[in-house]
Length: 320
Ligand code: AMP
Ligand code: TRP
Image 1 (cartoon, rainbow, N blue to C red):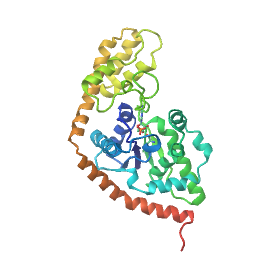
Image 2 (tube, rainbow, N blue to C red):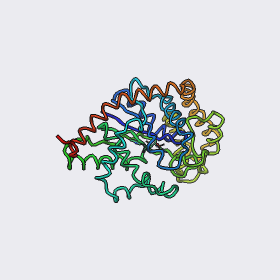
Image 3 (tube, protein in one colour):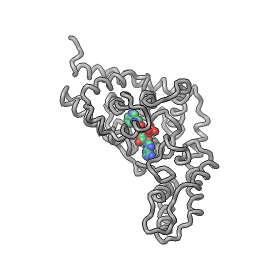
Image 4 (tube, protein in one colour):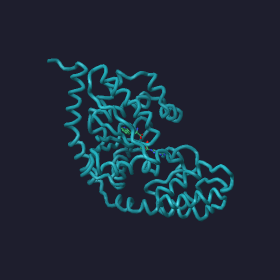
């Protein structure tokens, strides 16, 4: 299967990004034809600092490499290096309705916090272009992106119908941890919330212990187990295995769970998983990253250009 996914170079990556998307990318690259993208054109749809942006792009690429994206197995590149993404977004704009974009819950959420800009509104169309320009079939993302992948499916189908068979219909590939909640138990883990509510991939062991020890739980006794507690036990399941999670679920059901025992165990399990990632990250230089991104762009340029010629041909741009 041809796989495409992207991540924004905005802020630090956290366990939600890791479990919802990036860990899956690492697995998929073993068997599929994968393209992973640092979506620098998406991350400018809200205010950002141009002075620090180049370093943020480099840091995001380092994170992707540190979690295990292997440039020998996958293609890793950045979006703005391939002009066809923006070009196809424009072409797709002409077959997208305002109504479709108005329904996007991420736009509704973001436009409450940020200025209501056209780029933010149009963000899902650029995402569809990212996917379709390479004829991708599988899109590994967290649950919050499934509505955007749906739009890409609709636009692919519509384009094919209007202009002739061109794009495969892509589908979202979700993990079992498709929606990791924040440590305060309210809403999804997100880098736009307070750092105390997420574990960043770069957090030190001390910070992880501190954040987990102040994570929200229920009182351990009420009949209904809280979402916050469920989320934490879910994290233990991923990092320490089902047996450990089952043990605490049973304890919780019996009303005998000791969070003073559970929390340190969870913290240590997270630390153990992140340690090799952090070590690897420290070994990657800025120059390594520049080389890898340049190589990714070279490998993709021909494919994007060729597919764009076909798209334009179908849309009636080519004068014989
Ligand atoms: P972003 O940081 O918005 O660029 O998201 C990058 C990827 O991480 C996307 O596939 C998101 O769906 C995924 N993701 C972000 N936050 C979470 C979360 N709390 N739980 C699961 N997946 C997430
Ligand atoms: N919008 C995605 C996010 O914020 C990132 C993204 C951009 C993406 N283009 C993509 C994900 C294409 C998958 C495929 O998480």
